[in-house]
Length: 201
Image (tube, rainbow, N blue to C red; front, side):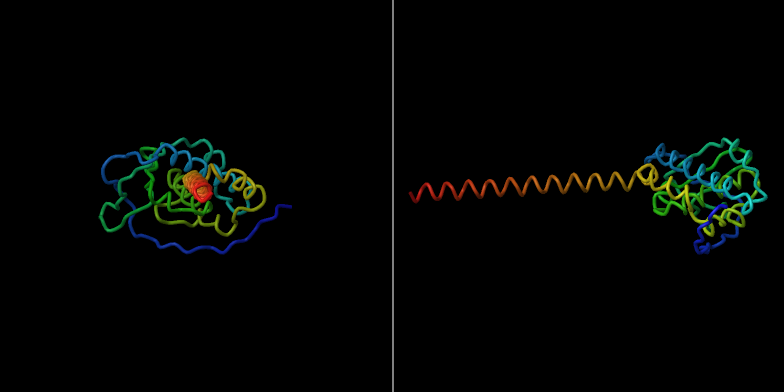
């Protein structure tokens, strides 16, 4: 029997618009790494769907896996066509592509939020959901990352949050550098004391 861990469902604001436009072109800012992170999040969403068919009875896992859209991270704002809203991501089923705002993606430090967004965009591409409407994708919040999914995310935490891990490595390097400077000062003080003692003698 599959054990399902229950989490509280989070509420999301619905923006009343269905067509979108990205400002400018799709550009860097770590786009390659972001695209890989989005792909991992999408794959975990598909795994959750596959492991919980009773929760996602309307979804065809084979279609989810077979879809191969372009993942286009952009540093530019993604605006609704009416210009009234700034969006985190948008998908175009006709062009078979999904555009994600890089900064919005980086700000999602919770793995489940990334899975939710990536999964929603995949469902939009396949016609299961409409933009900014989440009747299916928001079920991942109720399920959470139980059992193997939680272990998988934990064992691969640096892949999930590579930007955070990189910051931690920089912090560790900074601390180590500071320690070296302190040790150097301690040695200088010791040398000065020895010199002073020698002069007194």
